[in-house]
Length: 216
Image 1 (cartoon, rainbow, N blue to C red):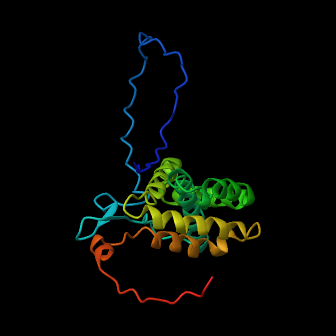
Image 2: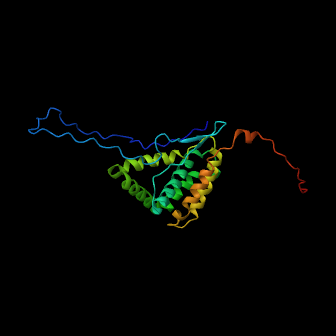
Image 3: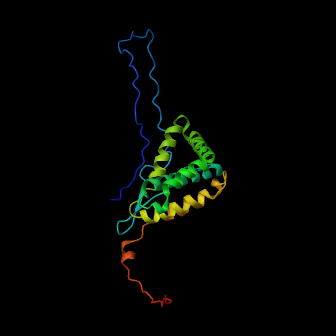
Protein backbone atom coordinates (compact mmCIF):
# COMPACT_ATOMS: atom_id res chain seq x y z
CA UNK A 1 0.00 0.00 0.00
CA UNK A 2 1.34 3.38 -0.96
CA UNK A 3 2.15 5.53 2.00
CA UNK A 4 2.47 9.28 2.24
CA UNK A 5 5.88 10.27 3.60
CA UNK A 6 5.84 13.22 5.93
CA UNK A 7 9.25 14.43 7.05
CA UNK A 8 9.76 15.54 10.63
CA UNK A 9 12.82 17.36 11.95
CA UNK A 10 12.23 16.08 15.49
CA UNK A 11 15.19 15.48 17.78
CA UNK A 12 15.82 11.74 18.02
CA UNK A 13 17.44 11.68 21.41
CA UNK A 14 18.06 13.84 24.47
CA UNK A 15 21.33 13.71 26.33
CA UNK A 16 21.02 13.18 30.07
CA UNK A 17 21.99 16.40 31.84
CA UNK A 18 22.06 16.70 35.66
CA UNK A 19 19.30 18.94 37.00
CA UNK A 20 20.34 21.69 39.36
CA UNK A 21 19.14 21.42 42.93
CA UNK A 22 15.89 23.37 43.28
CA UNK A 23 16.60 24.22 46.92
CA UNK A 24 19.12 26.94 46.15
CA UNK A 25 19.69 29.89 48.49
CA UNK A 26 17.34 32.80 47.79
CA UNK A 27 18.80 35.77 45.98
CA UNK A 28 19.64 38.78 48.11
CA UNK A 29 18.08 41.18 45.62
CA UNK A 30 14.69 40.68 43.97
CA UNK A 31 15.05 39.30 40.50
CA UNK A 32 13.28 41.23 37.78
CA UNK A 33 10.97 39.18 35.66
CA UNK A 34 12.19 38.91 32.10
CA UNK A 35 9.86 40.38 29.49
CA UNK A 36 7.91 37.82 27.52
CA UNK A 37 9.42 37.05 24.17
CA UNK A 38 7.41 37.84 21.08
CA UNK A 39 6.82 34.96 18.73
CA UNK A 40 8.79 35.22 15.51
CA UNK A 41 6.92 36.07 12.36
CA UNK A 42 5.87 33.02 10.35
CA UNK A 43 8.78 31.59 8.40
CA UNK A 44 6.90 30.01 5.57
CA UNK A 45 3.32 28.96 4.93
CA UNK A 46 1.10 31.26 6.98
CA UNK A 47 -1.36 29.91 9.55
CA UNK A 48 -4.73 29.22 7.98
CA UNK A 49 -3.31 28.68 4.51
CA UNK A 50 -4.14 25.33 3.00
CA UNK A 51 -1.35 22.78 2.75
CA UNK A 52 -3.30 21.00 0.01
CA UNK A 53 -5.65 22.15 -2.72
CA UNK A 54 -8.60 19.79 -3.06
CA UNK A 55 -10.27 19.39 -6.45
CA UNK A 56 -14.01 18.97 -6.97
CA UNK A 57 -13.66 15.18 -7.08
CA UNK A 58 -11.62 15.09 -3.87
CA UNK A 59 -8.11 14.73 -5.27
CA UNK A 60 -5.41 16.70 -3.47
CA UNK A 61 -2.43 18.68 -4.74
CA UNK A 62 0.21 19.77 -2.18
CA UNK A 63 0.84 23.51 -2.27
CA UNK A 64 4.26 25.11 -2.54
CA UNK A 65 5.65 26.87 0.53
CA UNK A 66 5.18 30.64 0.45
CA UNK A 67 8.04 32.82 1.64
CA UNK A 68 8.20 36.44 2.58
CA UNK A 69 9.95 38.73 0.06
CA UNK A 70 13.33 37.33 -1.00
CA UNK A 71 16.45 38.70 -2.64
CA UNK A 72 17.49 37.15 -5.98
CA UNK A 73 20.14 35.10 -4.18
CA UNK A 74 17.57 33.86 -1.65
CA UNK A 75 15.10 32.98 -4.40
CA UNK A 76 17.77 30.90 -6.12
CA UNK A 77 18.75 29.23 -2.85
CA UNK A 78 15.11 28.40 -2.17
CA UNK A 79 14.86 26.76 -5.60
CA UNK A 80 18.01 24.71 -4.96
CA UNK A 81 16.73 23.62 -1.55
CA UNK A 82 13.35 22.75 -3.07
CA UNK A 83 14.99 20.53 -5.70
CA UNK A 84 16.90 18.78 -2.94
CA UNK A 85 13.66 18.21 -1.02
CA UNK A 86 11.87 16.90 -4.11
CA UNK A 87 14.64 14.42 -4.89
CA UNK A 88 14.76 13.31 -1.25
CA UNK A 89 11.01 12.65 -1.16
CA UNK A 90 11.28 10.82 -4.48
CA UNK A 91 14.01 8.62 -3.02
CA UNK A 92 11.60 7.71 -0.21
CA UNK A 93 8.38 7.34 -2.20
CA UNK A 94 9.47 6.00 -5.57
CA UNK A 95 11.46 2.88 -4.77
CA UNK A 96 8.66 0.78 -6.28
CA UNK A 97 10.39 1.39 -9.64
CA UNK A 98 14.12 0.57 -9.76
CA UNK A 99 14.10 1.93 -13.32
CA UNK A 100 13.62 5.49 -11.98
CA UNK A 101 16.77 5.15 -9.82
CA UNK A 102 15.53 7.89 -7.48
CA UNK A 103 17.69 6.75 -4.56
CA UNK A 104 20.84 6.72 -6.68
CA UNK A 105 19.92 10.05 -8.27
CA UNK A 106 19.47 11.72 -4.89
CA UNK A 107 22.72 10.38 -3.46
CA UNK A 108 24.67 11.33 -6.58
CA UNK A 109 23.20 14.86 -6.57
CA UNK A 110 24.22 15.28 -2.93
CA UNK A 111 27.79 14.36 -3.83
CA UNK A 112 28.05 16.28 -7.09
CA UNK A 113 26.43 19.51 -5.87
CA UNK A 114 27.37 19.38 -2.18
CA UNK A 115 29.05 22.81 -2.16
CA UNK A 116 26.09 24.53 -3.80
CA UNK A 117 23.63 22.78 -1.49
CA UNK A 118 25.63 23.97 1.51
CA UNK A 119 25.59 27.53 0.18
CA UNK A 120 21.84 27.31 -0.39
CA UNK A 121 21.32 26.22 3.19
CA UNK A 122 23.47 29.05 4.54
CA UNK A 123 21.66 31.58 2.35
CA UNK A 124 18.25 30.43 3.56
CA UNK A 125 19.33 30.53 7.21
CA UNK A 126 20.52 34.09 6.59
CA UNK A 127 17.13 34.85 4.99
CA UNK A 128 15.33 33.81 8.15
CA UNK A 129 17.85 35.59 10.34
CA UNK A 130 17.00 38.78 8.46
CA UNK A 131 13.34 38.35 9.40
CA UNK A 132 13.39 36.37 12.65
CA UNK A 133 16.70 37.17 14.31
CA UNK A 134 17.63 34.63 16.97
CA UNK A 135 14.77 32.35 15.85
CA UNK A 136 16.37 31.86 12.42
CA UNK A 137 17.34 28.22 12.89
CA UNK A 138 13.87 27.27 14.12
CA UNK A 139 12.34 29.11 11.19
CA UNK A 140 14.67 27.33 8.76
CA UNK A 141 13.82 23.93 10.26
CA UNK A 142 10.10 24.65 9.95
CA UNK A 143 10.57 25.84 6.38
CA UNK A 144 12.51 22.69 5.50
CA UNK A 145 9.83 20.44 6.97
CA UNK A 146 7.11 22.28 5.06
CA UNK A 147 9.12 22.16 1.84
CA UNK A 148 9.58 18.40 2.12
CA UNK A 149 5.91 17.88 2.87
CA UNK A 150 4.97 20.00 -0.15
CA UNK A 151 6.28 17.20 -2.38
CA UNK A 152 4.52 14.35 -0.60
CA UNK A 153 1.65 13.00 -2.69
CA UNK A 154 -0.59 9.98 -3.07
CA UNK A 155 -2.98 11.12 -5.77
CA UNK A 156 -0.19 12.00 -8.21
CA UNK A 157 2.57 9.71 -7.05
CA UNK A 158 3.34 8.14 -10.42
CA UNK A 159 3.66 11.42 -12.31
CA UNK A 160 5.65 12.97 -9.45
CA UNK A 161 8.06 10.04 -9.39
CA UNK A 162 8.59 10.19 -13.15
CA UNK A 163 9.27 13.92 -13.17
CA UNK A 164 11.50 13.74 -10.10
CA UNK A 165 13.55 11.00 -11.76
CA UNK A 166 13.99 13.16 -14.86
CA UNK A 167 14.93 16.17 -12.72
CA UNK A 168 17.50 14.13 -10.84
CA UNK A 169 19.15 12.96 -14.04
CA UNK A 170 19.08 16.51 -15.41
CA UNK A 171 20.75 17.82 -12.25
CA UNK A 172 23.54 15.30 -12.70
CA UNK A 173 24.28 16.61 -16.20
CA UNK A 174 25.07 20.04 -14.73
CA UNK A 175 28.57 21.05 -13.77
CA UNK A 176 29.34 21.89 -10.17
CA UNK A 177 28.13 25.40 -9.42
CA UNK A 178 25.47 25.39 -12.15
CA UNK A 179 22.58 23.84 -10.24
CA UNK A 180 21.22 27.23 -9.15
CA UNK A 181 20.86 28.36 -12.76
CA UNK A 182 18.48 25.48 -13.53
CA UNK A 183 16.96 24.86 -10.10
CA UNK A 184 13.82 26.97 -10.58
CA UNK A 185 12.96 25.24 -13.86
CA UNK A 186 13.62 21.79 -12.39
CA UNK A 187 11.51 22.60 -9.33
CA UNK A 188 8.61 23.91 -11.41
CA UNK A 189 8.64 20.86 -13.65
CA UNK A 190 8.52 18.49 -10.68
CA UNK A 191 5.73 20.53 -9.07
CA UNK A 192 3.71 20.28 -12.28
CA UNK A 193 3.72 16.52 -11.76
CA UNK A 194 2.03 16.92 -8.37
CA UNK A 195 -1.30 17.82 -9.95
CA UNK A 196 -3.31 14.60 -10.13
CA UNK A 197 -5.31 13.57 -13.17
CA UNK A 198 -9.02 13.69 -12.46
CA UNK A 199 -10.77 10.36 -11.96
CA UNK A 200 -13.28 11.50 -14.57
CA UNK A 201 -10.49 12.13 -17.06
CA UNK A 202 -9.15 8.64 -16.47
CA UNK A 203 -12.57 7.19 -17.25
CA UNK A 204 -13.16 9.28 -20.37
CA UNK A 205 -13.23 7.00 -23.45
CA UNK A 206 -10.74 7.82 -26.17
CA UNK A 207 -10.87 6.94 -29.84
CA UNK A 208 -8.24 4.47 -30.91
CA UNK A 209 -7.20 4.46 -34.56
CA UNK A 210 -5.99 1.16 -35.93
CA UNK A 211 -2.49 1.06 -37.39
CA UNK A 212 -1.25 -1.57 -39.82
CA UNK A 213 1.92 -3.11 -38.45
CA UNK A 214 4.72 -4.12 -40.81
CA UNK A 215 5.09 -7.85 -41.44
CA UNK A 216 7.58 -9.78 -39.38
